[in-house]
Length: 159
Picture: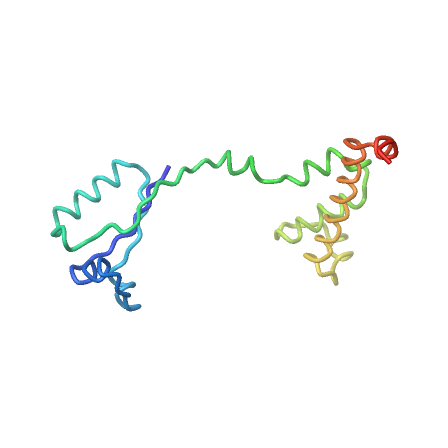
């Protein structure tokens, strides 16, 4: 969890804020600051420090929020299309298109590929080719998934 705060510094700028007056670009650069604290204790110590160093009317916390950082939950919500393709694409382990996609992905990521593959794809728009290739693989995998979940027999009986 992290704690975020946006603070205005300066007696005149605090007054402007309370009067809902706009700040100049210069005032924003100089007087408006954003901070991120790793712990609540760090945030409290910071507020205590600026409170002791400055008068209460010389700064104003204008926005504050907690951000729950849960990387596992974030990763959980991402769609891993390669896991889906691996599970549902017919003959995944012996498919040349899957191999080519791997080669193009490594090339696009800046990884080293063999000279023979380098020569084969030398004049290609790597990103465009990879997109089209992966789109086709995913589409075929989805078709197989859909046929598994909703067989055509059920579809014909519904008519």
